[in-house]
Length: 263
Ligand code: F6R
Image 1: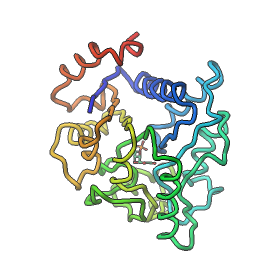
Image 2: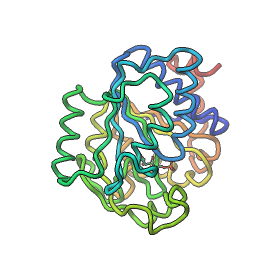
Image 3: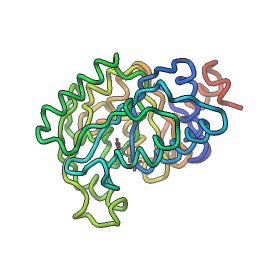
């Protein structure tokens, strides 16, 4: 794992967009795992700008989102499909047929989860997975005590996650779906590379636990410590409770991989 600290949210999300752009340019058929939530909005805006201004090409790219609410149709303005269309898919030259999210309206949820795993497998697995961290420490909707080997399945959301996401439902807790389909921790750990983005002071405590705390299923983001190629990007606010920041900064300043991103 490596931790990159950027001065603010804008710089942190620009760096994440640039890493994804570099991966996509190197491999136009990239299988990209995507996340939703407020943190990712700036990343998608920057990717859309890279498409518009520099011709970043998504035409061969295939995507798999981490999760979708159960009970919301793809046209529902609160669905993650709608979010992805609005923030990214409609703004770049991606083929909609290459974009995948779990079907939150599936009548047979277990079959849908199995189907999603098969789709990922048939695409050759996820090359790069983008991740946020929830206040409960979740990645995807892998709430506390999700098994480290869990696969795509339906999960109940914790009260903390329901409260975190309520602003997107007009602040009405009762409108936030209680369940979601999510890739499992095991599914996520199989991807080729993870990029985790967390910004803002409200994420500082959970980022410190995820990066420097013991690995535990009560904070599924700690599973990232097990991944062979994981980059955690944070702004100064989200980094404020980390202990080893001098070391992280030294690595960023000295690793050849980051040379083009230091400018
Ligand atoms: C959403 C997802 C979640 C979010 C996390 C952070 O697809 O996978 O794990 O990344 O809840 O959400 P925000 O960015 O809204 O704080």
